[in-house]
Length: 176
Ligand SMILES: [Zn+2]
Image 1 (cartoon, rainbow, N blue to C red):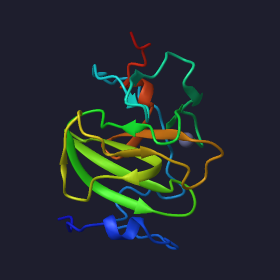
Image 2 (image 1 turned 45 degrees about the horizontal axis):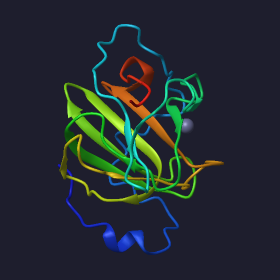
Image 3 (image 1 turned 135 degrees about the horizontal axis):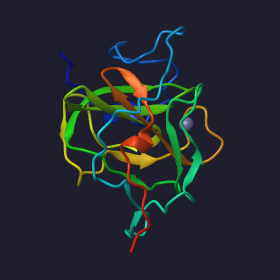
C-alpha cells in the first residue's frame, strides 16, 4: 500500500513543497476533534535521549509546553534540539511528510488496532515509509521544522483516525 522509498537524499536538500504520499491522515477542515475519555492507556513513557547520550524521561508537567485542546490536536513536549525520538509503541512507518509549515518534517507510525502516532517538527529522520520500528529505535530527532517557535516534539495520537488526547496514552514521569 505504501511505497517504500529512501528519503535520505531529500533530507539534505531544500524541501519547498508538500510531499505527502497519502492524504489519509489529513483532517478535513470541518472535522471536529474530540478527546475520547474511554481509552486504555499503555505503559510506555516518552523517552528522549539528549545529544550527550543521557536517557531522559520527560519530567512530569514541566516538559509540556502546550496541552491538547481544540485547535491543537496534540501535545507539545519541550526538548533540546537533536533529542532523539523513540516511537511510543512498535509499529510501521506509514506516512512521512515534509512541509515548511504546520508539522514540518513529520512521521506517522501505525501501531495496529486503529492506533497511530504522529511526531512533528522533527529535524533529522532516520526511518522511511514501510519500515518496521520498535520502541528502542530512534525514528528521528527533535527539530525546528514547520510552525514552531522553539524545539519541541509535537506528538499526536490518532485512534481510528481521530486525534485524541495524548495524555490518555502517555505516562509522563520523572527520570530516575
Ligand atoms: Zn503542537
